[in-house]
Image: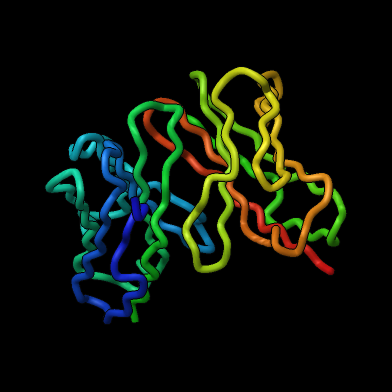
Length: 114
Length: 111
């Protein structure tokens, strides 16, 4: 398997624009996590899915953020409208069922909002 | 809810010296514990994990961590570090379905 695949790797956008980040989890994994990493706040869990269903979105900072998982092989994280403070590295991770399974991370999307 | 505290944000150390990166956690339920490593401009990679059994777990590149239930700690150690170990290290706790990370420790190995 190619691992967790995220696209794009880098995104630069202007304030107010819509941004969509994409993630393809490892085949067979039934948990998918979205994290945001910043210098100030470290690694924050935004939302996670189990079997394509959002389980906990308490980490989503505002209504400007939304995430979907239409099928087992694809998820999106959308920010609309984007703001400079959304600049961060966004990671997607997936894991197999069970608490003992580690999460496998993608390479991340570095988002810069100017 | 669970939380993870990594007590040192940065740890400078000379090459071939020993190092310990500290991690403490809190949780009201039993947990599984992980250490991840992040090299510059890359995602996180699993270094080692504790699920059950022996409280001492080892990685393939010489790191080890010991689970101490009474002290709720999972410190990471290496007896002799290399320049290539320079990276950020994250301790993580999984209780239930959520995976919670500490703030990270930047290990800086100097020649």
